[in-house]
Image: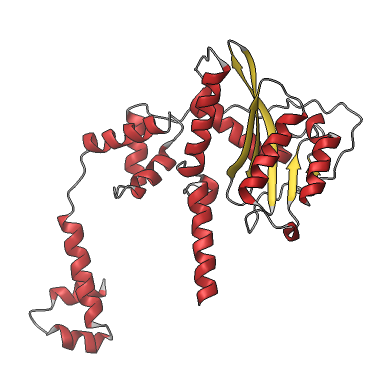
Length: 298
């Protein structure tokens, strides 16, 4: 506001004099003029042109983005538009995110295997990678029968760091997912890494518990029948099914596997995550590492 006032009086008083009297900098005044000129020269994006961009983002996300993520993606692509305009335009043209289903319990915890305490206690926000991992299993229907998916998520960045796809649901599916995560991340045994899961027999099995011990990981388990204790995995599976799988019919397990892996890679690299201030899991972790390097060199 001060610089705008100075600009109006520039023909009466020299800028250098105004800056001295008002306690402003000459460099700041000229920066203001450059910014204002840049805004004035920026072409206005018509509703039709903006709608093209919105439809492209909606298609790329397979209908998974509502107006908040769409708006953030537009900004990331250099399109400076207001969020109210994006929301109004999407509502007018019936462009909306697919709805998510309520969480439901699918785990069979009726067994006599050892149960670990709930170390996580719904503390889903952690301060560094490889502090808490979470795992869960879901299922996908195909014409050949069920396909089961086990994942391992790093709760710091919500990145899927391990997964396994099998036609059976034995303990091997969770062991394979954990091994993939371990060989990808190689976390230090000194970090006190926690692995959280439900009480399913696969996670309570001796082979899985032995693998946790070998890796120096402490086991944590949800309370009986409480899927919200593992809400991050539930949310991931909900996004996968709503954004990519619902409405599709898979003739073979191979087709379903290809679609699931493609979505996981897109989720890690590109999907804007509301918990991460609308950047992707990989970008969130890259930013954290870059900031850590800056602090170390300061």
